[in-house]
Image 1 (tube, helix red, strand yellow):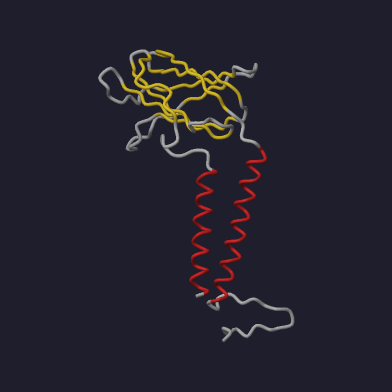
Image 2 (cartoon, helix red, strand yellow):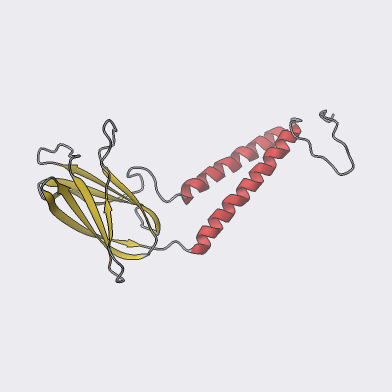
Length: 196
């Protein structure tokens, strides 16, 4: 009976910890948490779709993905996609990023870039497609990046730490039920045998 209660508690704690880790992460892979900024928009001789992640932009890790096709609607990997982030709220210098084309043999069809943006505010995003002829077209959109409150970061990380400590203490207690871990009381020598 005790072992069943312990097992249920342990599984519940591990599930809660994994759920909190998933919530605490800011990015999910490949459009799962992204926002389509524009779709099949003509940029020079190409048609481009752009996603930004996460859907609600916050300071920290952000991601841009660009899907580029030529006039025959064939994915084009010979071109590059450059992104320029310009703050609309301050005189900070623009941030220039270049997406990486997928490697040969990789199934992913998008040009991707990850960046850690630490300043909140409104940004103008210029998307430029560059091929052998040079810059062939620019498309622009705006994003708003909000800051994650420090108290929320500390609270989430503190809560995760508390859950981890509880899970570890329950695990140690569970191991002692099976005789794999013995608690040593002051003045009592461990026998090496499981208590009866």
